[in-house]
Structure formats: C-alpha cells, structure tokens
Length: 377
Ligand code: GTP
Image 1 (cartoon, rainbow, N blue to C red):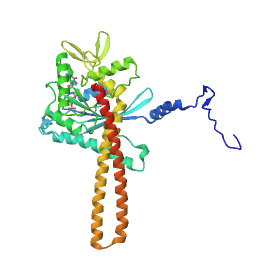
Image 2: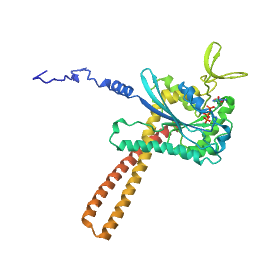
Image 3: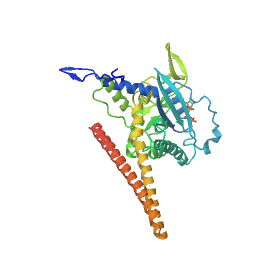
C-alpha cells in the first residue's frame, strides 16, 4: 500500500538478456477455466427413415437410455404419419467438464410417399433455432444466450441400396447450407467388407455429382504428432462412416462388449474391424465437436444472418419509398423529412453491416478454397 492505495506489482518484461515471466502464458488456462465453468452446449440432429437404428446409435454413443419414455410406435399409423420433432436434452459430466447435449430426433421421416413434409419440418427447426439466436443476439441479454442451434446432422442412409436414393439427395441438398451434414451408413452389420467399400465409394460419387456439401474435416495441423496425423488420415479415409448400434452388453471371451448376438457370432459395436462406430464417436465427441460448433457459427449462421439483414434492409427501403410517396401526397414535408432521415440512417447501418458480413464470408470462402486445393494436391 502507498498513500492508502493498493499498488499492483507487474513483473518486468526483459531485464538484460534474461526474460522474466509476465503471466500471459496462463491465458489458455484462464480460457479453459472459464469455459469449464460455463459448460458446453452441443445439439445433434438425427435424421433417417424409421427403424434405421437412430435411437439405438444415440444411446450407444452417449452410453445412456435417452428414449426410455418413448411410446412404442404403431406400424399401422406409419403411411400417413407426419414427421415431428422430438428434442431431448441431458447434462453429462466427465472429469469436471459439463456438456449439455441436445438430441433432435425426427421420427416419421420418409414414411409418407411425399417427403416434402419431412424436409420442411427439419429445415424449419434449424431456421427457427437460428432465428431465436439472432433475436437473442440483438436483444439486451446478449451475454447469457443459450445456443440451441443445430451443430451437426447425422443423416442415416440404409445399407440396402447401391448409393444415395433420390430422397437422400433431396434432403441433403435442402439442408447442406444450413447445417454440418454427416452421412452415416446405418445397420452396417448387413454388409460384407467388399459391399461396404463399394457403397461408400458410390455414396461419395453421388455426393460429388449432386454438389452436396457435407461436413469437411479441417486440414490436420502439420505441428501435430505422427499418431494424431495417422488417426486423422484414417478418419478421413473411412468417411462416410458405416455404423452398428446396440444397447446390449454381451460377454465375449471374458470381455464385456456392446454388441449384437447372431446365431453365427457376435458383432461388436466398438470393434474397428466390424464397423466405424468408434471413428464416428471419436470425431463427434473427442476431436471435431469444437470445429462443428465453429462451422455452425462462422459459416451457416453467418449465411443466415446475412439473409436476415438483407431482408430487413429491403423492408426499410420499401417503407422509405412509401413514406416519401405519402409525404408528397399530403404535403407534410417537415415531419416526413425527419422520418426519411431516420430511415436513411437505418438503411445505411444495415448496408454497412451487410457489407462487413459479405466480406467476412468471402474471406472464409477463400480460406476454404485454399484448403480444398491443398487437399487435392
Ligand atoms: P424410429 O424411432 O422409429 O425412427 O426408429 P430408429 O431409427 O430410432 O430405430 P431404432 O433404434 O428404434 O431401431 C430399430 C430396430 O433396429 C431395433 O430392433 C434395433 O434393435 C435394430 N437395430 C438398431 N441398430 C441396428 C444395427 O446396427 N444393426 C441391426 N441389424 N439392427 C439394428
């Protein structure tokens, strides 16, 4: 204390040749502490026809029974059943890190002959969450926004076909700009290794031919160690993941495993020789969850925001034109001039914002294109 005032002491930066500790090296720890305290939100949407094993897979992924209260579905209702959204949230904690996981399921998807309703329901849900976030962001309580935006959409494809069906193409094309799409081959235990390989190749060809933008893994950091690089390359090479789900724990040669018992043997969910379940879980939870959230914020949400602001700005311009016309008709120039000035100011602000956002998106796209070309090389 000096003159009754508490003095802070800051360590010197450099004294002679000797570097002293300032303290900013603890910044990552500070960020880490703050994030851990706040907890994490993650929303996963699962889409695919009834009976493809969506609920089973989600339970296997998060080692829970998320659907225990669900009523059994009546098969006679299926043909005209409307697609509805079922949202379930749970808090999971691991080593002091809290994750608020929301799973958005779409029972009834693809049951009706016309799938328009199914697409519309999913699209609307995603847009509604963006809209809610946009309104929260523009409101007073911006610091405590709950992020309910969909960060990833697992799209289940049946293993029986030769590639993507028209229904899959339509759905993915409808949503690829709005969400990180991760296609998965469901019930992969019905496929031989050769069939699995062929189906994956055909699906990737269909995805490219129909210009569907699925979630693209970020480039691996060259600084990473060899083991990480190997895992990353393996993950990318196995895409789209062929998965198996089961809620049954079996005993195989003294080991307890999650699997499916068949007359000829056991298919193990977590055995990498049997399916890509572990790869999907690693990607979704351990390695790419943060990137999925980043992509949602930086690409999909920015797109949505740009469209919103552009619409608001068009509406402001229309109302300005109307105001001008009315003031000319009624000859009330004083008040109208003031209002016109306010409108002009509003439009200018919107256009500035739009300009900045377009610039940001352009930069992001050029980074992505650069990233593509590196991968192609
Ligand atoms: P809806 O809730 O109606 O949309 O169905 P869903 O997609 O959630 O399917 P669910 O998980 O209820 O599984 C349907 C049936 O498929 C159940 O009998 C599961 O045991 C079985 N099943 C789930 N996963 C697999 C799998 O990987 N392979 C095989 N062969 N069957 C599976």
